[in-house]
Image 1: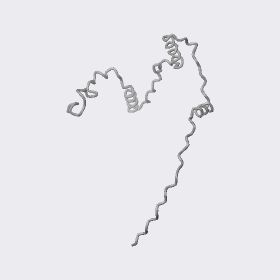
Image 2 (image 1 turned 30 degrees about the vertical axis):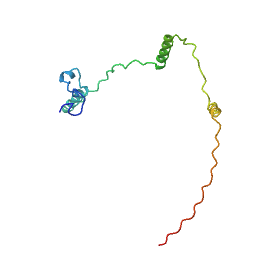
Image 3 (image 1 turned 30 degrees about the horizontal axis):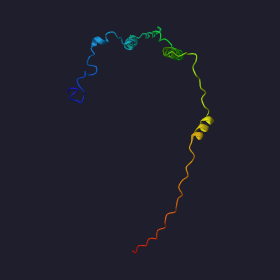
Image 4 (image 1 turned 45 degrees about the vertical axis):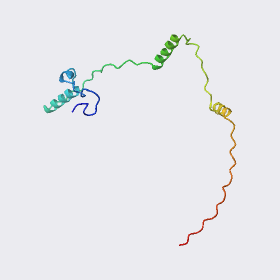
Length: 129
């Protein structure tokens, strides 16, 4: 069944179809090799070999993200022609200032319409069984 017949769009290769045994020739299964060495030593009645204590490859470089961000901001400001030292800093309003500003902006309360009582309806007659 083709990809189109299955409801797919156009012809797409099947996942993993391009893989061959040549693609994995550069890899080694170190765990399997170590396990086979341990099993072989045990079947011969010897002590299993000690695991290798070779240092792994050093990790990547540690980057100070804040320093990179600040440098990026400086470059962007320089590209726009802004002076990096003259940034405007505003103080954040406190909770009291926020509520005061909200109440000052609020429109005066509207008066609600006066409700009138609904007219009384006559009582229903009782049903006779």
